[in-house]
Amino acid sequence: MRIKYKLFAGFLLINLMLLVAGAMSIYELLQLRNKTVATIDANYIALNRLNTMLKSVETEDRSVLLLLLGQWEDGRNQLSRSDSTFNATYQEAQSHISDNVALDNIRNQYAAFKHTWEMPIVDTKKQGNLSWYYKVFFPEFQKTTSQIERAMTYSRSQMHTKSKQIFEASYTALMPGIVAIISAILMSLLMYFFISRFFSLPINNILKGLREYNTKKKAFRVTVNTNDELREISGEIKKALGE
Image (cartoon, rainbow, N blue to C red):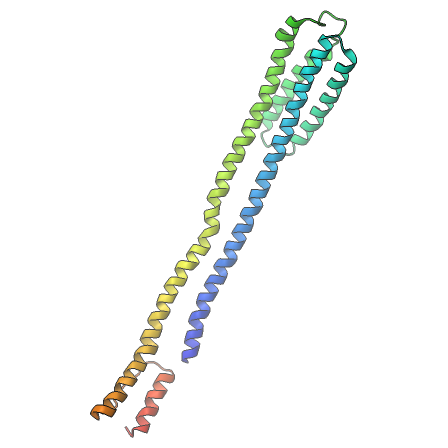
């Protein structure tokens, strides 16, 4: 094989290895980016929906206090709006929260909480009755907010867990590049050995043979074991020297 083809094949192999490894690293990094964006978006939406539900329940608490003060119209209007917001947000949250148990707990507890204020308050014995508020209404309010906050805590922990998984996956994305670098170093060492053994060494032997022929009048006895241009050069030199 010609020397240029040998060198070309060696460098081509190194370039192919780096190209494949680079393509694999780019693919893994793109996958990692997509997973990261999807995780952040999903958890952001989930936390946003849960926070909206929590604010709706807190608004209902303030609305009931207005009813206790006898402000029927303001209290009922705020209750109606907050209840509608809660229900709409709950429906949206079902598409973004994977913990169905937490969602069921929120729904059931909210139903129990809502039952405490659905019945009339103004112009009943409940109006101005702080004992009813603290013994009946407020415990259900606390249970409802606790269920929502528990779901929020779970969503945050899920985000943390998935973030750790993504961080660990980043090593997978780097592995092809690391393997390619190590392989390229090994291939470079092999190329160095190849050039030294099959290119530099025969040339040095030819030069040594010529020097000995010129200075010591020794016969040109150089053997080139490679089947390439260097053997041809050695043969032509022998012919030129008449050997």
